[in-house]
Image (cartoon, rainbow, N blue to C red; front, top):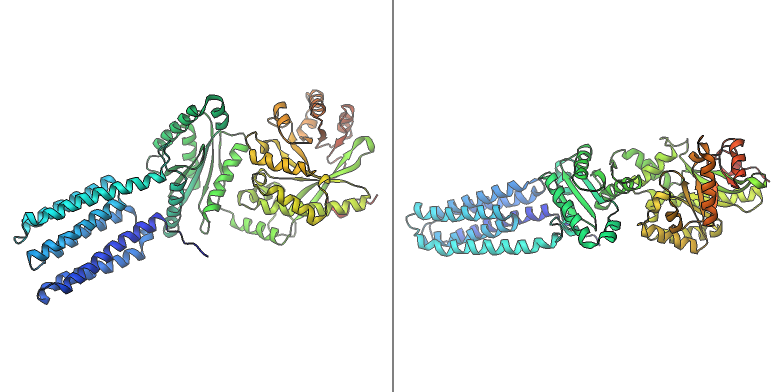
Length: 566
């Protein structure tokens, strides 16, 4: 069953259209039943029919109508009703038609804020009083019931609307909550589609907020969130809409703002709060679903946090041709996986494992580096499908290499942090192993230390499930950037893969290798060093008791079919 979602823009437009159509039809019925001559009824009938037609036009073009247009329609409605009343043939008919002004008050209070609704209600009261001055047959006392009803109905409707709107407001920060944001994003996407104007989205997250909460208490954390919301609302002004969509995550919708402009706004917003925060930015692209639109910004936020926090990252909605090529290549399984050996130095450089590295085939029309391929897949919601395909091809290649070498080997596969946050990731890996026949004990999954942040609860849970099934976990790029003993102790891992920068450095290499081997022994972890390119580097590893190595000295990455038969 297909579900249709009406945006707030649609609802407002349909309400205004319905108001005009109902008002027009009531006028037609009133004119037809009015006991007066045809000449006296004709002006009322013409006005009523015109009002009905106007309502139909509003319904047809509602997506293009700004909020100010609805104010204009209400003012015109007051004028139209005043004109129809002035043509009434008797005091009785004139007094009866003034009752329609209550519809104006109700409608204004539903679609406008307090000030706007109060202005329309005041204009209605002034119009009623003015009619008693202009029309001799309409005494002042005849409009008192209508004038009272206009005020009471307007105030009551505005009050009910305010109560209902509170369901979309976050009580702590005073900005929209997730429900309010979901309603607004549908409205803004519909408006962008109709007007062909840009629409950008910023996701903001307070860095290490969980640690702050745990250290200083929830009251302190709540105050941080409130202060951030106040600062950001002040910085935004009327430029966009802000919502709190998670614990410490905020979303900002920016109608009519490009990605580049949104980046500048995000930088100003980050500078407006105490402490660090990270931001992900993207823009809406025709054809985007809500989940894809938000997903791109979420990837940008993830990349900002993954690259050291305290920064903004734009995940562009452009380059659709490249994205389509990657999607089609995955669907056709038209990607290559090359394998690079991992050797045991003490056994004459015997191959004990191979690392699977995805490659964009030369036969495909758009050439991409492996880094560009993975990055684009992550940016556009394709990383799960790409990771699944690479894992399957790696297991198939492992069988070929095992057959050609005549002995058991392990296969190591790089995985993205975006895959790990999926609660179904471990189950998919287990299904792939069953389908390909590759054993869990011979699979190693490599993940960078940054992907395993201490607060990445789901990522750690998924890796723990896989380890329980026998899959081994390697921490890749160890020694590059942020590394600590406490993190090694807390992360689920079996192997440390030392970054190539460690072995290639000219200063302090002995001390670094001594420290890394000590960490490996202390936590009972195997140590593999990447980027070994010379025999001198290999000898240096052996001298420090490191027995596993990988690099161009032993082999370039190559197809499984090119491994030499033992």
